Each structure stands twice: as C-alpha cells, then as structure tokens.
Length: 516
Image 1 (cartoon, helix red, strand yellow):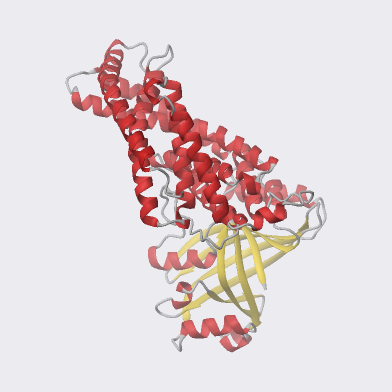
Image 2 (cartoon, rainbow, N blue to C red):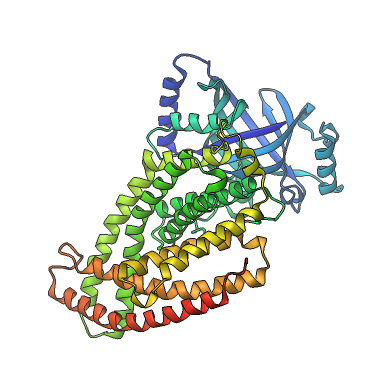
C-alpha cells in the first residue's frame, strides 16, 4: 500500500511542546496508544537494497514480529511517499517470498541476487500515537517516537514525530502540522530512520553535514505537461529555500544567506514563469511573502558582501590605512546583530507558516480552481508551448528596460539588473527543453553581464550602507577615511565597468535568444 508521511525532527523542548499541544488538539478525543518498538533493518554486505531505494526491516511489537518492505521512496515538500508491504515474520525471520506485491518482490529478489542478508542498524523507540481527524474529514495518525538509533557499538538518541495520512487529502498533513507547531521552529525531516541508521553505521552521525544548497537543474522534458513541469520546478525551489534556512540558523557561513536569497528569487521567477498555468491568489500571496523574506535575508547578505567584496579588497590595496580595521569591526558588529534578528525571524511562526503554505500549494495542487473550466486544458498543455512564450516575454521585458542604455539612471540600471536575473532563472528552468550548447552559450553571456552589474550594484549598496547617519563607523573619523578610499577607488572603477556592461549587452542582444 502507498504510505504518505510528514516527519518532524524533535528536540527535548519541541517534544514537550508537542505533547502539551496535542492535549489541546485532541480535546479529550481519541485515546493515546503507547508501544515499545524494536526495528531491525537488513541488507546485503554491499548494501544493494539501499542503493535500490528500498528498506527491508523486521519490527517487534510486544511479542509479534512483522516484516516490512518500503520501496520506491520519494521525498518532496517534506512529504515522504513510499510503497509499503507488510507480512507476518514468525520467530523474527526474514522470508522474501512473503512479500505479497509481485513487482516489489521481484525487484528485491533481483537486487539481493542470492546474497546474504544481515542486520545493518536498528531503532528502539517508545511510541505514543493516536488518530486525529481534520475539519475536512481526513484521518491522520500522529506518532511521537522517542528512543535511539543503533549500529554496531554506535548509538544516538533520536526524537521524531510522524504524521501519516490514513484517509483524505495531503493538505490535511500540513494543516495539522501548523496546528501542532503553532509557535514556529518546525523542522521537517528529509531522511527516514533507516537512512539515519545506515549513516550512523558508516559515519557515526545521524544527521547529514550541514552545507549551503545551490540550485539544481530540473530535468524537464518536452513531453511533460505544463503542470508537472511547474510542480517540479517549484519543488526544487522549495528544497533550496528550506535547506538554506537550516544553514542560516546553524552556521555563520556567508554562502547560506546567499543561497537562501537566490532560492527565494528563483521561486518568484518560477511563479512568474508559470503564472499562465498555475496563477492563483494563493500563489500571489506566497510570492509576496517570499519577497518580504528575501528582503530580510538580503540585509544580512549585503553586510557579508560589503565585508568580503568591498572592505577587504580595499584594505589590501591600502594596508597602511588603520581605518579599515575599525570600519570592518563596526560592520561585523552590525552583521552579528542582523544575523541574530534574522535567525529569530526564521524560527518564528510567520516563516514556518510560509514554508507550510508553500509546500501545501505544491503538493496538494493548490492552484486548482473548480470553477475555471479552461484550466484543465492549460495544465495539460505541453510545457514546450509555454516555454517559448514565457521566455519571449522575459526577453521583451529585458530589452524594454535596456532601451536607451547609454542614459540609464542608477535606479534604471538596478531595474535592468533585476530583469536580467529573472530571464536567467527562467532560461535555467526551461533550458533542458532546448539544445544544451545554445543554452550554455546564452547563459555564459548572461553571467558575464550580471557579474558587471553585480559590481555596480555592490558599489551603490556599499555607498548607501556606509554613508548614512546611522551607518557602521559613522562617528569614527578613521573609519570614515576608509569609506572615502572605498568610494573613491570603486567609483572610478564603476564607470569603466558600466562601459563594459554596455558592450556585453550589445553582444547578448546581437546574438539573440536561442529559443526563436
């Protein structure tokens, strides 16, 4: 049978809040069930089942053993979807012939290919569970698991809440998650317990190393419908955003806020790209929230950029000027304060609500409008038809903003830069539908142009940040001398950069779009 779950990683405080909140949600309704579960995962010595995306386990509940296969696992929007097949396992012995779904049984037998199966890891959990009903009539089982994961002589404590959809629409899982974690701080799990056990056996850890997540190509194909393409692109944006929220929360690495801001910008670009297909008031609301969150993240990212790309290079060029150290210290202090404020915001209910609503919109097809009788045809149209129109619209907007490029004001240059970003993201989304050589050449030219625009934007941003009444180091003469050096040198360089930018634009315009 198909299984759909939303898993939430808990800490001590999160577990306590969840249990307290559960009493309010239950309101004396469904009884709580308590179980002791021991689950042992088996595989071949070279882990062929894991490589095939399958988990094979034996679970002891009371005195009863059950054999379970979880196959064809996929995680999107925080949802874990698997095909689950249970069978009795007398005396706790594996028997692959007991797998009742022929296709899955044959897949596993082929993967194992006669190799010996043995335990890799296990979990020992105390489970508290109950079945809850949503206002729409959906039935969801909530299970709170507290215990440990073991692999050989290694062990690690672990707490997790699982929301399993028993009946109804997947939107009920997100609605219930919002009710159970109203304060914010919800941390969706992207790994099943089996994967954590394998990781423990191999590395001694049960969490993957935290690292900034860059955008990844979405493998679109011409035969895809526009709706499937939109869903897959939005899923990629969601993963980049949520992963980098965790990075910003737990790491000072400048790449974290950089990739988070990119993820939010790509999300908004994708929404504009697919608006003719999935346009909906909820999408507009989510886009506005993404813009606001991007501004908050941008405040931290701009401080990182000023330090690394503006102050530090200027200090290297003027090593004898003491004001740079004073200026950097003041900007770093502002950055630390901004980072803490951003982290509080990311942990709050507003950002959590945005993440839940975005996931629900993607995974529950939140764009459907029953009264729109023409929507079905738009959703089912080939994505290739949409791609050419959408890219053409973006290109037209860029050309409009670049008209009279020799005389653009600072504000108009900034608007052109934003339009170029939207075009580049759109090209990257739709690129797999076209000849890769042509796409690569076009993107390469765009990147060169955006790099120059980025340098110009950095100067304008640095000037605004460092020259105000409440700017970092505003009351220190040495720091202000350093600011003077920065703006003087970079100002002269900016005019040369702008001349180069105009040349690059003429080159891009001359080559023309690859999709026509």
